[in-house]
Image (tube, rainbow, N blue to C red):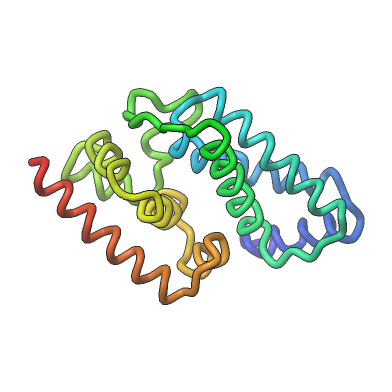
Length: 186
């Protein structure tokens, strides 16, 4: 059975019966991705773990309220994004640049998505990550969602609350700006 169909069935069980087993299966499907998404934003293992836990707790509470969910993954990423924004606001948080050697246990460079294979063929992934960190937050986010988390433009649109065309334009601008940064560093 395909991943999207499995997700929809689990989401149906979760919404109709508040089935904790269905939530556990969805958790297993997404915990690593959400953790990776958060980790790239906060660059701290403990903080990323705390935020990831908070994301799943908030989503469980949201579902318990009986609210309609179109996409579980969209809800997770949107919640993670909001938790990160809350962190930035509450602490005037400054993320430190991340290097490949700092990846936590269980997260390998190969887990960085299809982009890692393409990136490491021509350049050091650590330099790419450092270059991405130099981009403005909006560009970092769409690049991470598209090339690290391998989400579609439609999913990114749902997560960010922007239209599909706006997401495509932002991706194009982010890639163009990233190329300039990388070319000037060489």
